[in-house]
Amino acid sequence: RKTLFFVHKRKRGETMTVKQMEEFERNNVFLPQETDYLIRYAWQMPVKQYPLHHHAYYEALYFLSGSIIYAIEGKQYRLDEGTLLLVAPYELHQPCDWPGERYERITFSFDGSLPGKLSAAGYRLSGCLDTSLPGYTNVFRLEGERRKEMRELLSALLAESGGQAYGKELAERALITQFFLLLCRASQSGAYAAALQTPAARLVQEIAAYLENHCAEHITLEKLEKKFYVS
Image 1 (cartoon, one colour):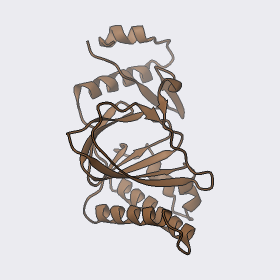
Image 2: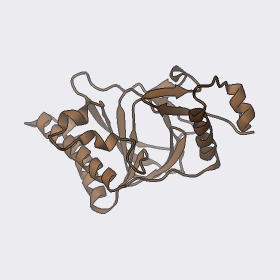
Image 3: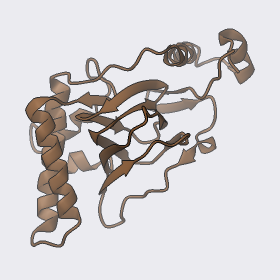
C-alpha cells in the first residue's frame, strides 16, 4: 500500500480538495502593506521534512545554485540553476528531496494584480501566468542569455529593494516590468520544464483525473483508498 499525501485540482476557477485547505499550513510571510511585492534571497541546507503549504499571492522562486526536487499540485520537478518555479495563490507545494547539498534562490512574491498594473496597450504582462498556454507547467527552464538576464535582473531588484537610492520605487517598477516581459517571452517560446514521471507522481495524477471526471459525485477518502490501494 502506498501513502496518499494530497490531491488538489482547479476547475473553472474553483478549488477542489480532498482535505480542506485549512488542514495545510499557510506560509507566514506576507506582502508589505505599502507594496504589492516582496523579494528575498535565501540559501538552505537539506532538512528532513518541510510542510506542505500555500499562500495568498504568487511566488516565483529562481534557483541560483544547487539542486532540489520540488512538489506542487501533485507533480514533482527537479529545480536547479536557471529554473524558475511559479506558484499561484493557494497551490499546495513543498520541497521534498535534497541530494545532500545546499541550494540558493531568489524568491519574488507578488500580488496577482501587479502584472496588469504594469501592462501597456497591446502588451498583457499577465499572459505569463496563463495556465492554458500550450505545454504550460509551473517551471520555466531558462538557458543562455535568458538565464543570465534573469539572474542579473533579480539581483538588481534585490539590491534596489534593500537600499534607499534616489528613484528607488521607479527603478523597482522598471525591473519588475522587465521580469514579467522576460517570463512572457519564455512562455511564448515554450521554455517549460516537464514534471518528473515517478510512480508517486503518476498515482496522484491518476487520482486527480478521476476526481475531475467524477466531480459531481460524493467521493470519500475511503472510496479513493479502495480504488487506488492507498492509505
